[in-house]
Image 1 (cartoon, rainbow, N blue to C red):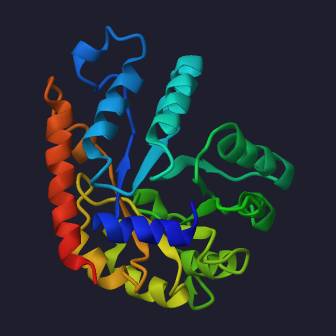
Image 2: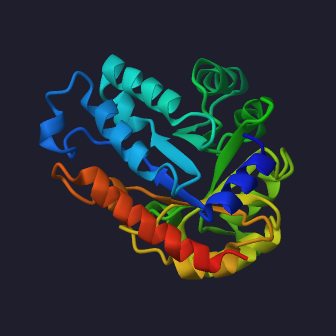
Length: 267
C-alpha cells in the first residue's frame, strides 16, 4: 500500500486506527477452542467486526510463532483474510545483517502479503535498507518506545541529544516518507513535538493508547500532519473487550468509540 492509498483510506473512513491482533490463545473465548483453528476463528470475527472502523491491522508475530506451524498457518490465513484495503503490519521487530534482513523482507513481503514490517535499527543501515527495497512496502523502525527499558539505551544523552533522536535522524536518511515510518510510543507524549520537528513528514505508528494509558487526544494534537501522519495502534482494549460469545460485538463497540473520537481530531 502506498502512502497516497493509506491517506485516502484514512480520510474516507475518518479513522487512523490500527487494530493490534496480538492474539493470545490463552485469552480468547473458550467456545472457540473447539474450532479447527481457534486463533484464526477469533481473528476473523474481530476483523469482520472492525474493518470499516480502522485502516490498519498489526499482527504481533510472536503470538503466532509461539504456536509453531499452526501459528504460522493462522497468521497467513489472517493476513490473507484482511485483504488489500487495510495497511497490514507484521510486528516482527526484525533487524540483522544485510543478507539475513533481505530474507526477512522476502518472508513478509513476498511469501506473505504484508505492507510493512517493524524493524530494530541497532545494527545500522544494512539491517534496515533491505526492507526499503520493495516497491509499495514499508519499514517501521523503532524510534522511541513505551516500555520501561527505553531508559536503558533510547533515552541516553549523547552529544547534546537523546540517542533515539540520533537514531531517527540517521534512519530518515536511508528512506523517505513514502516507505519509512517510526514507532513512537504514546506514553512518551512529551517527546512528540521535538520528534515531529526531526521528521515532519513521516508517519508514526503509535502504540500505547488504551490499556497502556496513552492519551489519544494529546498525541493527535501534537503529532498530526496535513496528511494525518499517525497510525494509532490499539490492541488489548479492543480484542479482549469481552471473553464471552459477544466478544466481536464488544470489540466493535470499543473500536467505534475510538473512531468517533478520532474523527473529532481530523483536519
